[in-house]
Image (cartoon, rainbow, N blue to C red; front, side, top):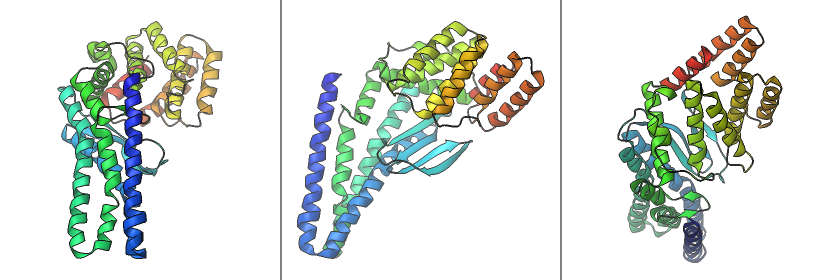
Length: 359
């Protein structure tokens, strides 16, 4: 793993140097000699490529994911983000320094390994198509105007950089390349096998099965994961929800405590921390520890992410009111939870939350 990371770091740096050299040659040498209009076209072309190159890469993932029976959960490229909120896709702005990514949710289970391979390869295919389009546009435009062609030529180095970066199996500062994930799925490596299992679980949730109705093999059918693997936290969360549904409180608490241990190194996003704090509140109330429940609620508020408009928040408060003997207030919280559950696209998730609310 260390060797892969070292190779990935060196490889990405070499590509970055070549990218810089290519852009300098185009902008500072060729375009500068052609004059101000050519220089303006070269600079504009590079800036546009910074936006459109990752966009086509992520669109490739989204397109092939959709062809494999998946729906878009979130995609982020440059400073733009499209994410699902309240059952609908919303456009927003994001930091351009955050990594590009696309998240898809399977609409059904079955044949997930092949579907994951197609989805992963989609990014490379999308990037390759964009590179071909750029080269073709540059060559055709060059027939009529050498200056205007620089608008496309100056975008080629970055397109080549991103394509080659993902075409080689490696691990660099931004994570695993598409080729590395693709190879991991083919070889049934632990992280990628866990990813396929998680996709299958979500596919069956989309079909209407709750966590406890999904076969146990999908929760444990892969080798032990390292704690710094992104899939480690996801599988712990899925196991926690399965145990919670089954009434295995001790095992659920163990998974939750392990997730809590990941909060310190910063592996979890603020939204995940806020959701985790809510589940800690729920478990503390189940065990009768109201003081710890109150502390966990305050911890969730410190993340700066408001999770009040969620079914989980209503579930937690319904349990709190019930434990205090405020049955009417608990019923109000349950009714509020039902309103939020109507916006939940995963039928299995709705079923799971309703099962917990009924207890």
